[in-house]
Length: 454
Image (cartoon, rainbow, N blue to C red):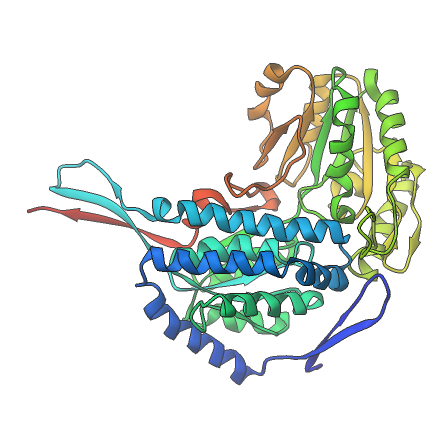
C-alpha cells in the first residue's frame, strides 16, 4: 500500500507535488486536537468567531492570484473560473458574517411555560469528505457555517487537490482560528470508516458521487451519526417554444460547459420542444464550436482538460455506448488524454447512458419532444434530483409546474447555481440535507428544546 499522494497537472501531465499520508498515529493526534479545541471554541462569543472570518475573507482576497493558480494547476479549471471561485468564497464568508448571529439566535416559542425556546448548540467535530471539481468552494461552503456555529472540522479532500486542501487549512490558521479548528487529513478512503466510527466525530458531510454517498450513509448509519449528502446530478434544461434564445443562449451554454462540464448541477439533458428545435440546435452548436480551448492559465481560455485522464475515458465510454444505441454526434466526441472535446449528441433517448447517467464533462444530450407536457415528463424521468431549469417567455405557466419536478431546485430563465442566500441540495439519489443559507448553518447543530417554569 502506498504511503504517499502525488498530484499531477492534468493539462501538462507534469507531476506537481508528493505528499506523505498521515499515519494512524497522525490521524489520532488530529482527532484528539479537534476534540480539545472544540471544548473551548464552542463557548467563544459569536462576535469573536465572526471577527476571524473577516480575516479569512481578507486573506482570500489578498491571495486570490496564487490560490487560483494552485487550483488550476491541480485540476485544470480555466483560470478565470478559478478567480471567480475565490470571489464566490469571499461572498459566502461575507454572507455568514452578516447573518451568523441572527441564524443562531434562540427561537422564542410561546407555550404554557414561563419561558420556552429552541437553542442551537454545536455538535462537535464534523468530518467533510469533499470532491475536486470546486476545490475551494465545496470546502468553504461546508466549513464556514459549520465553524461559525461553534463546531470544528476535519477535511478529507480529493487526493488530486491535496495542495488546495493544505492551503485552506493554512488560511484558517493564519486568520487566527485556534489550532485544531480546521484540519486537513491526508489519507485515503480506507481510513474513513475508522474516522467516522471514532467517538470524537459527531457527523459527516459528503459531496461526491451517489456511490460514495451510499458508502458514507451506510457508515454514518452504522454508527448512528447524522450525515449530509450532496451527490451527483443529471439536470434537465427545458427549452420551450417561446424561449428567447438570443437572450439566454449564452447562459444555456454556460450551464453545460462551465468548469469544462464538471459540475453536479450542470445542465446535462437538453429537452427541446420541436417548434424551436432547429433554431436551438443552430445557436447552441455555433456557441459550443467557438468555445476557446487552450492552456487553462490563460485568461481567455474557456474550455480546458478534465481533471484526470480516467474521467475523460469514462465520458468517452458513455458517449460511445449511447452512439451505439442510436445517438448522433453533432459536435465533438474527441478525446486526447485528459481532454474531451465539447460534444453535442442529438436523437438521444431515455435508454441511453447520456440520459440515464451523470456525464461529468462537456457532453450535452439533446432530446426533441413534441409538447410542453412531454418536456416536463421527460425532465422528471430521472433517478437524480438536484435541479431543473426552464427557459420560456411564460414565467407564470412555468411557475405552475414547480410541483411537478421533485428536484431540490427549479430555475426559470437561469441556470441552476448555488447561492449562499439560498438552501442547496438534492432529492432521490442526489442526496439529502441542505447546505448554505440558514439551513446550512443549522445542519450540524443540536436543536435543543428548553422549557422553563418559574
